[in-house]
Image (tube, rainbow, N blue to C red; front, side, top):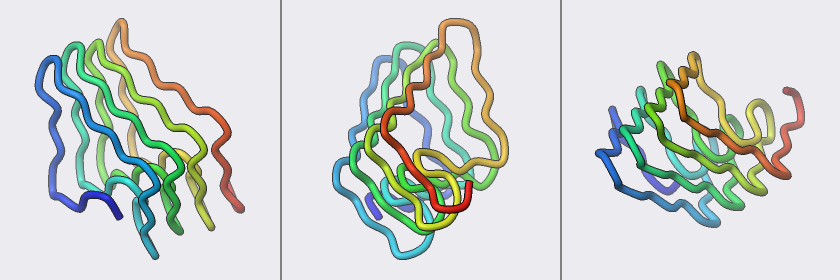
Length: 106
């Protein structure tokens, strides 16, 4: 896939873009144990594909603090077309958008 890390933290005002990424198993764009977005950070996952978590596979927590994440056109062969995460936490002002994502099982 695009990025494989233990922990992915976006600091205030940062941006990350994952486009046309492919993984054979987990996380087409991103595979991480945790994904934390701080204030005014943004992440975009577009047209990413994987078995689990077409856009992103997060094994523990995906947390947003007044941040934004967009999953567009992502696909999973099994679960989580846009995002597959154990836990998804949003603070006030956080936005997650899922558009045209698909998964065969969930």
